[in-house]
Image (cartoon, rainbow, N blue to C red; front, top):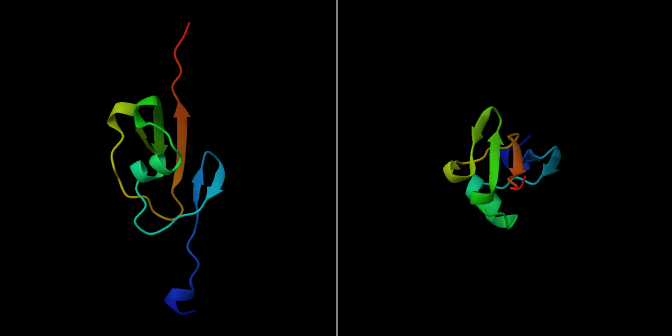
Length: 74
């Protein structure tokens, strides 16, 4: 199969397929989802990032991304 005909694999975002596109980064994904990085914690595969330390790391097809909203209260 020619390389340009190979379908890209989706990401898994909170257990659901999410389209992957070349150049997608973690911060771009959060921006697309209208999520403020300061208000969430994120795991990409086996790496965990608290809100203030979310890196602008590239994402790859097949990555598993879990986004957890941080809520306050007692």
